[in-house]
Every structure is written in structure tokens, then in C-alpha cells.
Length: 246
Image (cartoon, rainbow, N blue to C red; front, top):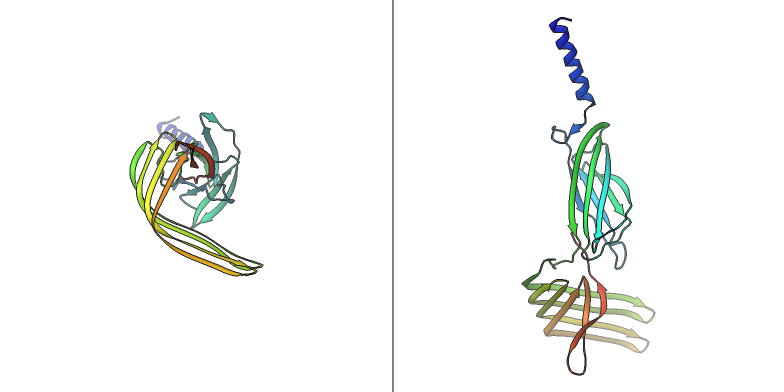
């Protein structure tokens, strides 16, 4: 075989090997995956455990998803479902898991792309998250705090309209030591109720000029403090579950 034929054979062999080799994510292909926590509420006090994946184009993808979900050092078994879609001209997939989320959970989601538009590819993206609460950093801290919130409930029954409204704006401080988080704020607000009965209506509107808002959260659960006859306090009844965030 002369030199030109040998060169052609080598070139054809190299071309064949290149066509069979996986495409690397750094080869210029429009491959990218953004992982966004999709912990949207699916009930009164629950959060759906899901993630929205958005790709760099509107192509066809084959992916593998692995979740490492640890709670208090224990690995939780999990399963997931995929719901493919498209948003703003980009391919998306909603990955929903069958595990719940709890305060302090540590999660690592790994997404491996194995095919893009029918071509074999190799790309892997991971994201690590810790479940916490809004405005409550996980690390020990002591910071100034300012908040504004409102609560309103209105409905109508057989006796007429009913309404309850409470609002608060205050400033203070917040301190975390381990799993215990204290917050105290001084502020003002409003309190209003409307009660309708068969005998008439009772309408109450109050302007609150000086209000203390004190909260203690233990391991993600809002509690209240009970005092005994000697004035010593203990943390007891759980009032509500905390919210979660990425």
C-alpha cells in the first residue's frame, strides 16, 4: 500500500472513531442544564419535592437522574417521575420525587445527559441543597432583623360576611445557636374582625402602636413558651411547620 492509500485509510479510521465517540460537553455543542428547586406547595402545609431542569436548546434529550437525600445522616430511598415540556423555546423537564422535605435535609441532585438529538453525549451537572426556612440562615448567627407580614381570612356563611385580619411591621434581632433560633421584634400593626350572627354584626378595628413579636424555632418547628408558677419557661407545643427554601 503506497503512502497516499495508507494516509487515506488512517483518515477514514480516525473519522469512524470520531463518529462513534461520545460528544463531550466542551466540544461546542449547545449543551447546558440549569437545576432549579421547584418546592411549590401542593397542599395546605406540604411542599412538593420537585426540580425544574432547563436545557440550552429545544432538542431531544435522554437523561439519568440520581438524588442523594440524607436526613439526620440517614440516606432516604427515593423514586422519581419526569414530565417533559418546553418554555421560551428551551426544553424543560420537571423531576418529581416521592420523598418529602424536612428542615435540615441535605440533598445532592445529579443529572447526566447521555443523548442529545440522537447523538451520544457525556455531560453531568450536580446541585447541592440544604432545606431551611425563609430569612433563617442555617449557620449560627446573631443579626438585626426587620419584617413585615399580614394575615387575612374572609368568607361568607349563612349568617353573613366574616373577616379576620392582622398585620405587623417591626424591627429587632435574630439569633441562632444550633437548632434553636430566637427572634424578637418591636413594631406596630392593625387588628380587625368582622363577625356576623343572626343578631347582627360586630365590627372591631384596632390600631396597635406597640407590639412585641417573639418567636422560637427549634429544628424548623415554630414553638411557644410555657411558664410555670415560679416564672420559669419551657419550650413545648408545636404550633406549625416551617416553610422550606433552597
